[in-house]
Image (cartoon, rainbow over all chains, first blue to last red; front, side):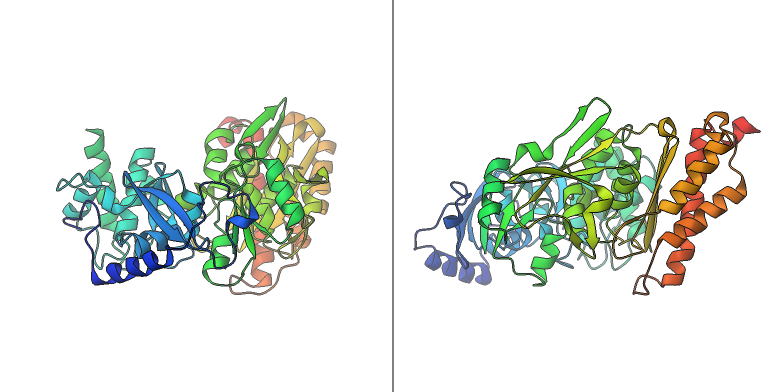
Length: 202
Length: 294
C-alpha cells in the first residue's frame, strides 16, 4: 500500500451503483438504530436500520440490515475495501480493524453494534502522503507477497506496538498470532513490527 | 432479524422474558460465525454490550465476581494475580483480537465441551450467576453443563456473572492443540490447589460431552497429600502419586474420535497434561522448585 487514499470517497462504478440502490431504498422512513433500539419495533425482519459510524475520524451514515457485519459495511457500503475478507469466521485476521484503539476482527461484529465507536481502518493510518511508521516498515522489510493479509497484519501490528508486546521476536510472534499469512512472510513481518516498534519509541 | 440493544439488565431481562427466542450477543466470537455461515437464523439478537454492569468485575472480600461481558483481555490484565487459572485459560483463547472481545459469559452460553475456561471454573468451584425477569439464581459450574452445547440456562434467562474465590494456592491450565493460537482444544485440563481446605480441584475439557470434574483424581490426590502431611511439609510429590493422578484424570474422560484427535490420544494426552500441570503447581506450592530443594 504505497499510497492509500486518505478517504476512500473516490467512486468506482461499483460503489456508484451500490449507493444508488441504497439511496432508492432509503427513501422510506428508516428507523434510527441510535434511538429506541430496545423497542422490538425498531427492526423487523428484512428491515434496514440507519447506523452512524465514525470511521477514520469521519462520521458516516449507512443503512444496513442488522445482520450486516462491520466488515461488509466498511467494504460494500462505504467503499473502504482496504479491510479484507479472508475467512469470515475470525480465524485469519485479514479483517482486523481498530475499534476505540483496540484491535478486533470486523467480521465478528455487527455494524449496528459499533455505533458510537471510533473505527480505524488501514485507510485511516497514513497522514496524507506520509505513511504510518508500521506501513513504512512493512515496505522496508518487504513484509508481504500477495498482500491479501497485509492490511490486517498492519492494523494488528499498530495495536501490537501500542500495547508494548514487541520485546522479543517470540513476543511479537505470539501477539501477532491472530493474523495468518498464506505466503508465509512471517520472518519479514516480524522484522517489520520490531523495526516499527523501535521507530515509534524513538 | 430484529436487533435489540438494551442499556440496563432489567430491560434485557424484560426483552428475554417476552421473546425467549432472542439470541444474546456480546463479544460475538461464536454467534457471528454461526450467522456468517448461515448455520443459524435467529429471529432476533439481544446485544448485551450496552449494559455497563455486565462488563465490570468486582471483589467482595475473597470472592471475585466477573461480569458475563468482561472480555478475556481484561481478565488477563486485571485478575492474573487473584484468578491465575482463569487468566491462564483466557490467555490461550483464540488470538489477541478474539480476546479483546470474547467473554467468559459467551464461553458459558455456547457451552461447547471445548470451551477453554470451563475446566478452570469447575476446578475452582465457580458459581454461574443467571437471571431472568422471574429472579436470579446461582448454578455451580459443574452443574451448569448438561450436554454438547446444552446448559442449565432456561430460555428466558441470561448469564450475568461468574463468582469464584481468589486463589489460595497454585492453579494451572493446559491444553493440547495444533498451535498456540486459534485452536479449538483437542483436550484441556485445569488443576487448583486449595491448601486451606486440604482439597484439590481438577477438571477436563474437550474430552467428554461436557466439561467434567475429575472427582476420583481430586479425592485420590487430596487424600494422599493430607495423609502424608505434604500440604505442610511441601516436600516433592512422589512420582507414583503424580502418575496415578494422571491416570485417574484420564479415566474421568469419555472422549470420542473426531477430526481433532482420537479418543485414545485424548486419554493419553490428558494423563500427561494432568501429571505435568500438577508438577508445575506443586513446584509453586513448594516455593521455588528444584533449586531450593537441591
